[in-house]
Length: 118
Image 1: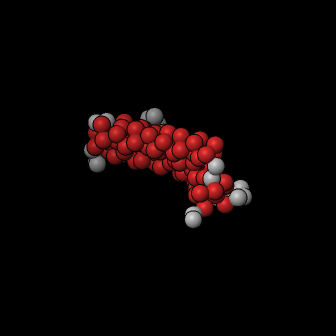
Image 2 (image 1 turned 45 degrees about the vertical axis):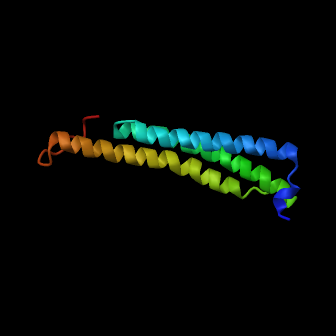
Image 3 (image 1 turned 90 degrees about the vertical axis):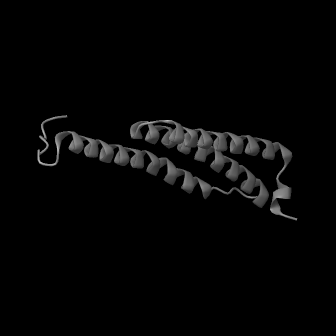
């Protein structure tokens, strides 16, 4: 007998819904990654969908393990905070690196970039 048998049906149904919604959002982000054509479009869809998809999966995990263990289990929220903080930062770093790379290809390596331009 596993501890999942201790999860009541009224708690398992919202957990299953959160898991399906989270997995669906993550799938939408993956489809956007494949479908979009430019790099800038490709970094946008997975970033949004991964954050919300991870939130749904983490919510399902909190519900199931809290009722399965018989106590409140919140250490998954640390993973959620980490994903929520690092995903937008990664998006900004990748976007700025690509913009810097594209700007260098247009200007050429021999022309220095004027810092007064925005």
